[in-house]
Image (cartoon, rainbow, N blue to C red; front, side):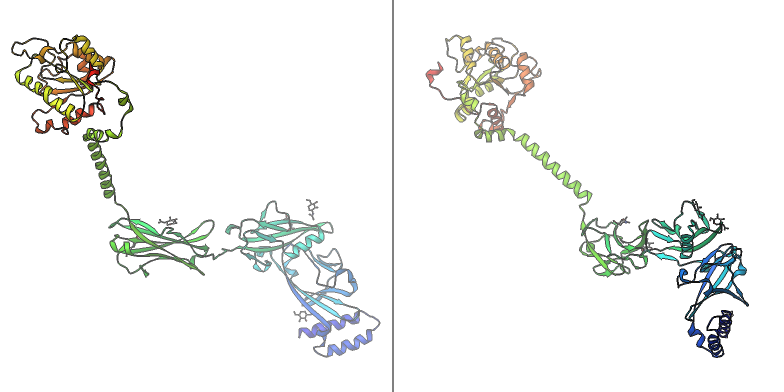
Length: 577
Ligand SMILES: *[C@@H]1O[C@H](CO)[C@@H](O)[C@H](O)[C@H]1NC(C)=O
Ligand SMILES: *[C@@H]1O[C@H](CO)[C@@H](O)[C@H](O)[C@H]1NC(C)=O
Ligand SMILES: *[C@@H]1O[C@H](CO)[C@@H](O)[C@H](O)[C@H]1NC(C)=O
Ligand SMILES: *[C@@H]1O[C@H](CO)[C@@H](O)[C@H](O)[C@H]1NC(C)=O
Ligand SMILES: *[C@@H]1O[C@H](CO)[C@@H](O)[C@H](O)[C@H]1NC(C)=O
């Protein structure tokens, strides 16, 4: 039905035109009008719907041919609003034609309707362009029909372009842009597009671009809105296992242990990211002694989906140390797994035991060294022949001094035996030392002082034999007219010896204690001797010990240790004198 009306209308128009070929046209038109479908072939029909908000303006040019080639006479606009209303070129009208365009200024809802542009060409072809205009009241401005295409992509930075209608109007009239978001003004945006950098959910909304343009010295607004969506973009890279990173983990037997299986699946992929533990290839869900908890997080702001499965072994047992634990991560396209075995951790107690053992060994070694220092020194002595000794040309290895008087019988016997038998037999015969023994080696008749002085100089050690009560004085006793007892303690020999040892430091002193010290200790001895005793305790002669006389007894080892490393060279007897 509507098509017929159009055709009739077309015929009327053609008659209005009063052209040269009017008659033919009339005939043809009449024929066509009385006919049925042929009109559409002649007149191409296009249509479009435009939504506007009350109070705005619309500048509209229908499609080609280009405006410049049009003549006003061949383009007509009319509104089909129950009756046909032609649109005039009167600039005072709110809706008027201008050039090839139609202006709708300060539209009201009543302007809604079908508007048709009819274009006729010289050759008789014609175009009907139907525009349906729908004007919403200001209160309805959020109607979704007013929205142009929406922006819905995964770009991080969004470009919101002013919809074409507003933009073209602005270009045509040199208008200015204003931007609104969700119908409130956005300051500082005056371009035909708007960039939103690093968009987030808060940037979602309706973006309206208003073009303010001038026509006949008045300002009009044309707007266009788009809805922006910020999508949760997803990405599916290969699954990554963040934990475990090592193939082994230390564990304590019979304690609880938690194993961490953490996988990263990509961005925003929470539905397709799983992590789980397998023990010897079996899922742990129903296995006694194990408990698995799975948790998923989305890291912000990267939105990385990370799933963690924590396997709790309630009590680590021997079989766990043999088991293979597998952490398996499954993403949407890939899966990955990592295996883990448990290793016994050295427990604190075993560490302590080890430390104690080491300590004991050290202590033992120290004790050994301390106890056998003398033996070790003697053992290694031949290896370390000291040059100084070789150069040492002194004749005697030791000058032996002892108390000669004021001794009880037992002490005297012991001393005599020691001096005359034990000492020479061990040191001289077995060890090869040369001793100058006071009383034995003195040559009678010689100047005693000179002799002592010389021989003292020729000796490398001063051996002092201490007897109970030695040094207490010089009292001749009638019972002991022994030759050994000519000399007195604190006498010349001692003094010279101590002088050499202490002052000149030419010889070191070997102190040997026979028997007990007696109740007074060493306090009765000369000060110099007391000083030496304090420096190194005298070696006690173990009179009772049966092995004492042996060269390798403890006593002799200590004495030999203090004696020179190499015995003095045996010199011809003549040199001695
Ligand atoms: C006017 O509109 C009516 C209904 O929409 C339609 O039937 C009629 O053909 C139209 N007339 C013209 C001349 O476009
Ligand atoms: C656009 O803005 C410029 C500068 O602010 C102004 O000169 C011009 O008149 C404005 N144009 C319209 C159509 O408002
Ligand atoms: C046109 O838009 C401007 C800027 O958004 C606004 O200040 C003005 O009030 C609007 N005018 C009309 C008639 O809507
Ligand atoms: C598991 O391992 C991941 C990655 O190393 C770590 O971020 C997370 O905190 C761990 N979770 C637990 C409970 O140890
Ligand atoms: C596993 O552990 C969770 C949390 O530690 C606990 O709520 C749950 O009851 C445990 N399940 C079993 C079977 O022990």
